[in-house]
Image (cartoon, rainbow, N blue to C red; front, side):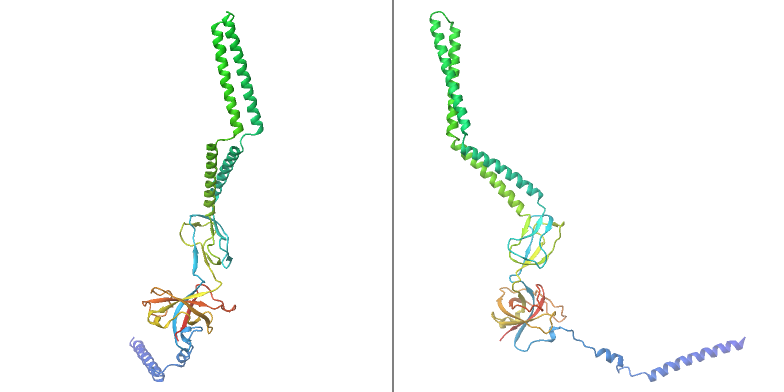
Length: 364
């Protein structure tokens, strides 16, 4: 039993010595720890620059630099709805050019259309009534009124003759007093009826009174005002372009709900010419002037300079509008907005609204 145990112990000792010897050989043959390996040298030799990094390409000369953003000729116009409602149709697409007053978005307007139809019907009725008042009675109505008046006069004359004969007969005992009184009453009634028919005839010939015409015109004007109100309420259900320009962004789809005065439905801009709004550090304001030339660069077109000219300086200091995410950038500094009008960019190198730019303003 002792022999196997001795052999096992010697094997363990031999394994330990082999392990230590292997590590010792590796340590002796290994490179110095402070000397870089070839693989590390090759990895470190790769380019650390990014194509289009404008920070590494600064023009030679006396310039004031600043970051900015491209905008339309007169900023963006964010068109919202004055009334809430479901969006029935979106009438434009992004990139489409529109004129002032062109429809952009149509809201659901079924109730407004029905109200307009009612108002138009009321106006038609009021206009017909006014026309009837102004024109007066027809010739047929005048003839009928004249005939009725003549018949009334004839009945009154007949009744008067009967009453006179009964009164004469009563003097000789040929009629009673009661019969005479009834005849007189009938004669008086027929005379009053004849006077009424004569007045109706004169009214038919003379036409409407002035007061009736004034009232009819007032009803017509009120109906027209209600029609215009209903038409305006239906009109506001269609959002129209307040300016001529290009549709930069459509932010809604048909079937969505548009809240009143909420987020813009469509963003417009006059892109016939572009400008750039540049943030200039307050320490550099004394070197910037209106009319100075400018050179602008964008990461999309490395090595290409876009020409511009300073056309306006801001009137109030503020915080930065554009941040480059550079870890050494100062974000707590005050800036002044400088407006640069851009020359027309090449067709194969376009600039887009909202694109960030790096501007170099000539300070000479």
